[in-house]
Image 1: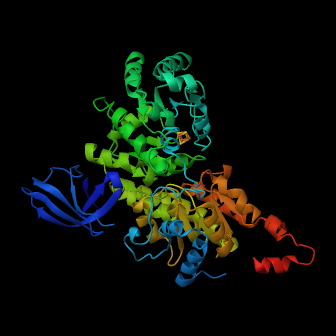
Image 2: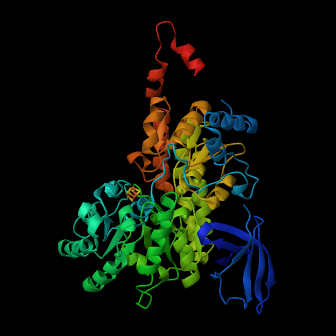
Image 3: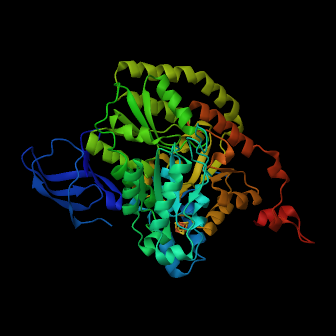
Length: 70
Length: 494
Ligand code: SF4
């Protein structure tokens, strides 16, 4: 699930692991194309299929783990 | 004794770990840490939410306890069946002191224990028929119950009963919600997964039941989420919110009702007290209904003031003024309490070991009294809890996750705090060691501790525990002098 925090940044939440972390970079961040590779503050990275930016956040989606920080 | 330095704390951890065999030592070392408030991420220094190490004494509960005891139990107008053998129901006698109003046994049921009392034949032949019959009986005996939840204990999952099918069928028959909860005790590593499962069951079976029903809303509707009304906590919080002009439409779940939960999607803002046990449902409501949520902390005036302002910031000027009015009104009362107790408690050191939110939330209340929290830890926290805790704790203080009986005793023996705050299982060990103790799960049969009124009670209780003259009169059995030793020598050696 991706939500927007009070300061306007994206926050990533992975229910299965109770992982809550700020997203430091997202490959595509425009209204038409949104997603791609995302990097978390903890060093982990995930991939979400690029798609149109959801009309409203928070938004649940499928993310593939590229490199989990552990 | 002054606060420990970073090196001393590290040495203490190493010393305590020494008795373990190598493998256990390696595992436990990851759960003990010296706090560094500059770190953003707890997982660099502490591991949590892992399976407890076999062979040590853990203080954790099971998923069933998390669902039946914590999340569902306090919902007062529903009947919660402890489905399985009778023993697990120990957790379900209202022992957490979730206060409520209502006539027990007529329209409220939080203190009554319902169980399907599984016998051998139910395990062998399955218990679905029994469950259906039981639900029917409950409806006959207690027609005013608004709904029923089926809380699975371990055997239900093992024998593969289909409680969902029974619940659906009986729900339709009785025209009442019958909610199956798959919270078998073996799921997960602690009660924490039980909270999550319980949240998910509410999401799937309760939350959307009134989505299309009419509701007279106001722009100031809020819900209190994750306050279990221990000793009346939710009440002393609620009056503050109402006084500042908000309307509380639901309490989750202390003194809460099924209808309140069904109406929560109509709230404008969800106020989350216990993050650990109810963040799941708050996140869900944010996504599905667009209701923002914020965490707040009603322990001690400093945090209350911060929280009231933060809550008010989500509303218009009327509420903001309301918040200031509330703050101003209670300030003289707080000043008087602090003037009375701070001189008595100044500099006293506290060690905590509790559950969901308290290991970090209460720190501010102690600090308001001039006390210092030198060690804290959670039974069942996850990484995000420690992220939040590390900022609250002082530098080089001790953090312990899922602490074992042995470690906790050793830490306390070495650090010699002036007060330990933990649960009933720890209470008598530390009292026998001659250390003042307060139960911080049940508020030691006192409370409430939330809100301004709660702080007055909190301050009095802490003073009562610490300043009690009995501690000087007590010599623990192992300090009793043998023929040729004096107490002073022994105390020095200890
Ligand atoms: S672990 Fe299983 S058997 Fe034990 S109390 Fe929990 S539900 Fe009951």
